[in-house]
Length: 108
Image (cartoon, rainbow, N blue to C red):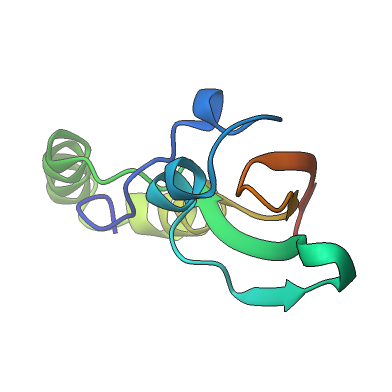
């Protein structure tokens, strides 16, 4: 699990006035796209934060498993499974493709 994960998005570039291309490069392709009257576009992105891969952490877990004869997995696995957080962000772009409004929520 520690060696698996997703690239972390740089949320510093996701803000009002950012281009659609820049936001898609960070958050990935939108899960939904809605063309609105007047030419604006509403997109929804879903992504995970805190699920970065780490081979060093994986090695540490392997050593801890060996030392504790596998008992570390009883506590460590549930903790690691809940380490990352899933988020949904709704973005409305104007006719020139610049972000106008951004609303993010954490998914349960």
